[in-house]
Image (cartoon, rainbow, N blue to C red; front, side, top):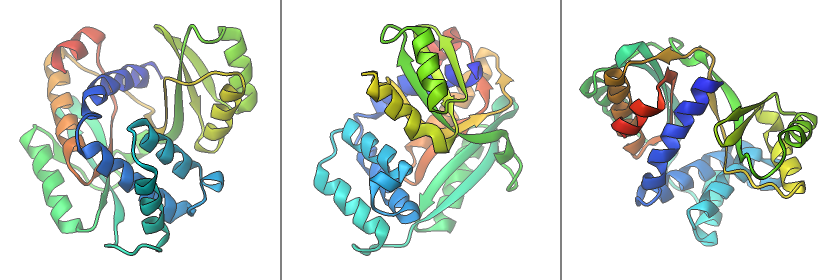
Length: 248
């Protein structure tokens, strides 16, 4: 868990600048569309859609854009057929990388992803090579000053959280995907707003890196995340704070 926490912190530091980019809207719209396609257009019964709408509101997306994306996902608004694909590969240092993609042109995207791996010292792998290392999880972070640790643990565990750990100035809550919304709602009932909450994939095994390899991996991840068709990138590296600060 600690490896994921440090990696997530590094990614969020970069995301703070990425959010200002025009691609932020397109990626959020895509996630809303896919969530609505797989779970229906009613956010009350679709946790993934609720999470996607929350992300859209966080980047100040107009309500009309959100509604159009939902209608496209449910088939009411038409548009090109988009499919979700997982690409698996290795980054420098033997780090496993899992890339979530949504595309309307599988061949074009496959070529792009392969080239990005090769350009940054990595390589694509066969299906099933690394996916098993990443388990679907809900990750919620709460600033430590918002609620006493004992109270947080009681509320979170009763709502279905699997683990609560202290990391620096924050608590990290790990949940199953099914319990993610229940834990967030339990926190909201106590007046606690998480600093970060997402449905993601958490690595079960982590690879420690030296600074040089950490820099190379982060460059690959950033290049992948900037691709229009990529929705999420997961990597199982552990990097110390000093290395992360110098390579971002």
